[in-house]
Image (cartoon, rainbow, N blue to C red):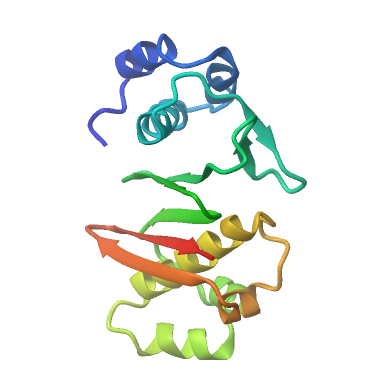
Amino acid sequence: MDECTDDNVRRLIGLVPQQRVEQALRYRFVFGQYACLKSYAMLAELTGMTDMTFGYGKYGKPFLIGYPDIHFSISHCRKAIAVAVGDVPVGVDVESLRRVDEALIEKTMNNSEQAMIHADSDPDMEFVRLWTRKEAVLKLRGTGITDNLHDVLLGPEHIETHTCDGYAWSLAAD
């Protein structure tokens, strides 16, 4: 992301509430700070709200205090930022393509998913595609990675997945 600069971080700090600035500054690297601030700005634009205060559920899922009918999810990776907003619960995940080892595949994927990964012409991208699906569902549910990862994609959720140049993203909704 070309926009990820110290100058843009400073510019965004002046546009977001202190709660979000404090959260952003906990990130060690400029990219994390930028993604945290930029995702807030994107959420504000999508909701039409200029002053949002976050609360957090039992497992850390954020929500907008005072707006129970606005649901959102935020994710970022080295190549992209994703923000989803809906009138029903949503979950979004975006991940950069990376080399994946067999131990991680076995830990996170069921036998059918492992077979899909190994049969694909680009197994690393297939892993990332499946992982974003799982992460989007977990964000939708608001549980984080507390569920049995092998069974995550067996639920009733609707999931849409896309791959781009070097990354994949998925959106899950009830």
